[in-house]
Length: 335
Image (cartoon, rainbow, N blue to C red; front, side, top):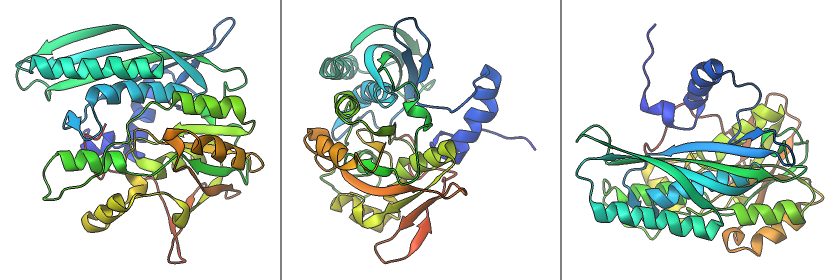
């Protein structure tokens, strides 16, 4: 049967995994876990290399824009791989008649965020296409960083063990809700702003000051549930999450109830999952809560010896439900 690419293949869920594994990983000879960054052997210091494309709609949203998003997303992919981000590249596909002032504002926000993250944008490319040939503006950023010694396998979950604890650095779903509100397709107003932020300094503090971090992953497309399913697939273990302990801001929770969204599958752009040895978890939580980007951090669950590799949510009502790897997407064009 003929297959065509649908929007669901860009969701970050099961269909995205099928696309990457069946076409790209197979054709490009990629072996082993598919992590956010690839570790490259280099004399003296291994390097991490990553790339990502950004197609968010609308381009401007409460808390940021596509330019800030592109820098933060690439910096975070390096940071959670155990790397110190160093340099970025940026490539732009611009539709003709795009406003000069808007492009300048986007570029300025990229420069500002790169400076805050301590990285430099050192190279790039620009293409202008005819009207209707792209949706206003697409940005692709790549990044390179130096892997911290001893963390070469951080992104592979090779060190994750039963009874490790699961920590997030703040509330889930704010980015998705902020972008949805900016689209003006529903008649509602909200104070929610995107959480888009560079996490490299927070991640660095954890890795330098806490001896027991076994895994990190930034929580973006597909939300926390998708990251947890990827963790279980890589580690061969299961996980339990406590709904009562998972931070979700009240405005996000309320809109999810009204609109039928599940916060566990909503995108974030300034949140990460940290898997930590249970003996070190309180120290990791203390480090995170002292940082502005981790002030609402919480221990939300643990790794279990469930060889079915499933994620179980213990609900506030006292029941249990499986957080499966969603096939499609709740909201398109989020990041």
